[in-house]
Length: 146
Image (cartoon, rainbow, N blue to C red; front, top):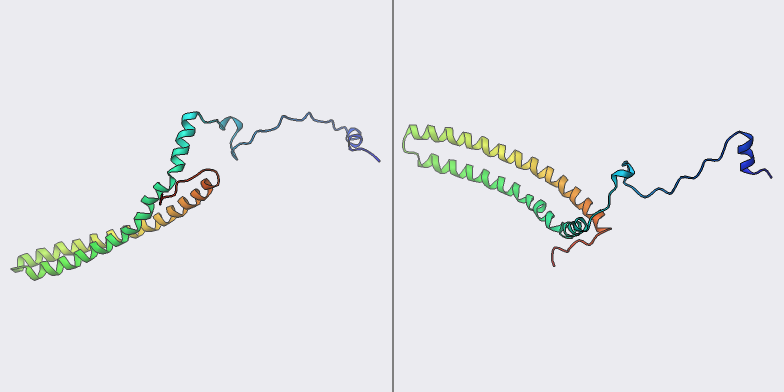
């Protein structure tokens, strides 16, 4: 039986010296980019990850933004009705109509922007939860109820 080394020699291929084992690194980064953490950095990492659920509280409260926008819309509707009923003369009524027309436009713009914020917040919540799932595999994250 012919050995692989004999075939390689016949073809003129020489054996390459083995390279030293490669240490694990972040994908796409050179070995020089991977660094070790100092004691202070490790402590900071532990504290930041341990309190990860606290950061989510802010993200989860953005659902109230649409409720606020709806309330502002109701305020503008009720205020217009009230103001137009309470106007004394023609001049006051025309001024009030102009003001509340502008208020309606602002209220609609507010609702539109609140809707955009809500959509972006939903994406951020999804990313936050995905990151949390990965971090939980390696670190202890404090339970928010405790």
